[in-house]
Image (cartoon, rainbow over all chains, first blue to last red):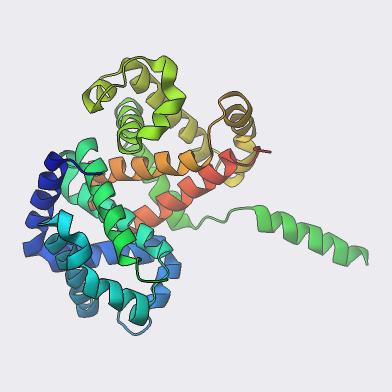
Amino acid sequence: MLTKHEKELIAKIWDKMIPVASDIGAECLLRMMTTFPGTKTYFAHLDIRPGSPHLRSHGKKIVLAIAECSKDISSMMVTLAPLQTLHAYKLRIDPCNFKLLCHCILVTLAAHMGDEFDPVAHAAMDKYLSAFAAVLAEKYR
Amino acid sequence: MIPILTRTLAKSSRANMVEWTDEERAAISDIFSKLDYDEVGQKCLSRCLIVYPWTQRYFGAFGNLYNAEAIMNNPLIAKHGTTVLRGLERALNNMDDIKNTYAELSVLHSEKLHVDPDNFKLLSDCLTIVIAAKMGTTFTPEYQASFQKFLSVVVSALGKQYH
């Protein structure tokens, strides 16, 4: 359940991340794969060394998708329909991993925003990312 | 027979011990050396109560938790945050036997405080994020991995005496 203020806060934060999407996205993925090595199994086809172009381009895709969706959170089900299909039928990433990436996104945001990532922003962002992950997993079964 | 039995017993007790690399020990010590327990304790616990409001159920006697501002300014919460950090310091100082170091604390949380052990993970996630906010990008992915490994051992030890 997101308030109007929380939705605005979320949109504002992600808007700031768009110009640095590759950096932020790569860092989120790197944090996830370093902290939770099991997640590396989904990236066997990519070069996932720090700074690699694969990591940056893949990270950028993820950040831009999250940022795009944040501009109109109420329409999440519609905006994410193609990604739902992709994850359910092609990628088939176990949804428990979405939580791990969401956590690493929060850590990355905190590391870059410092005190600005206060408890209210954290709560709003956690709710948004949880909802995003839940919608992404909807077509799995 | 006996040498096999001894080997098996030795192997199983080694299997229970957590192995730390030198890098992990160094990372965890370095992180703790940068923490003001009063500041981080207060931030971590208040953040947990705000981000995961159901955790407030354990703090009925702590006064005003009505909204985020009240929680962040609550002196009892701040004091308890310091207590939590001091507890973590005990784990830091006994990294090779966190399970036994925390045996009494685990009993306390289970039998007296009746805390659902799933909540320990929520608090540990908030602590990770508070530290990331404080250390910025010097909280590298390697530091994060080491620290989260430490916290997962702590969380597991705290849940050990629940029956």
